[in-house]
Image (cartoon, rainbow, N blue to C red; front, side):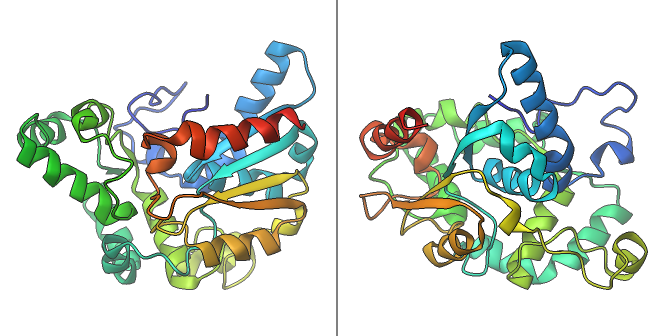
Length: 286
């Protein structure tokens, strides 16, 4: 199981400290280009094998598409990829929170840099205190916190175990780089799956005024896309666009439960029947 850099479980570095600005100078591009290949090579070396199967969820799918498009040699190391709620194209994102802040993404990025805000929703004393006040065990607090989740990912109580919310909130938020969030915002605005947009500095960094598109046609690993109608972050139209762009997409699997949301892929009460049985069939076929 992989772990994205920058969260509360992954802040160690040989040279840098989380207090250093340069420590946070990464988006999901760097996670896909550097970190994910390192994880895969470590596992393959440890197990003395040449390939593995990959299951990604949300940003875990984004980083996979970065890796296999920009470092296509890693396609040979993955025998099959299952993408749960894949996030690449974000044209049709329905989350009101994402839609509200997306137009201000460039301004947010520069303001956070000026004021030295580098980490998004860190796991610190302030956040823990707010979680305790808002997301305790009282029924009203649980309803409030579940609605906060739904504002990001889509409304649906059917698959949510409300009594388990205190446990879930004990693990989240775990922190991320502000640059990761800004990169997603850029994709929502542009409607494309591209590298980070540095504005004026694009010409120097990329040799072009616009950031390059990720070359999804180079992703030749067999890919299976799992999606749902009520996922506010991975709209079915965006998933279909991704399916058409990949070099070897095998199937789009629609979760057979209409009110299934983004977080239900990992928290849903019925994931065993709705997700895992199909997932197991695919894994056994490779």
